[in-house]
Length: 120
Length: 107
Image (tube, rainbow over all chains, first blue to last red; front, side, top):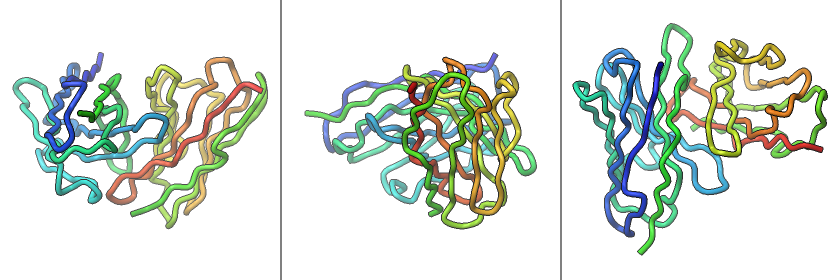
């Protein structure tokens, strides 16, 4: 059974750095890519970036300069770091694992999300 | 970036009704289109991948179709558990982008 679980601080001060962890079970990070997706309160979904199964990364250009995604395959964990946080970064943050094969690429498994509030 | 325009933004509907949600891409996306359902508690569930393929366990009342820039999700007969938010998502090119969502509400 595949499970993803996000964890993080909950509250971050403006201008500080956000660090989140996605702990994955039931699949291998060397075979499956993992994305971070966020959702501001009452709004839609925004893809932030991905760490591919080969360890490469791709980021949404809108936040690329502030974002870093990495992983520890031995611990089955994927990390998100985003700096210079502002109030508009307040959102539910989800991690999701891909199923990728030939013409298919989709977010097959999702975590429950972790709410991050940016406030002083 | 490819913009995904989803319509309608909200849809009141009745149990047993057939409903269709539309998703239009700002350029052709070669069927690289997925659909997701988000329940009121925030849980996100994949429904359909590559335009028309049902995720395992998704009821057959859900179906997807489309090509080029225009895609749709149809629910043939609404059940109580179907009242939720629905999002389309393209993966033709980076950044991956989602539609703005359709809220399916009980009439």
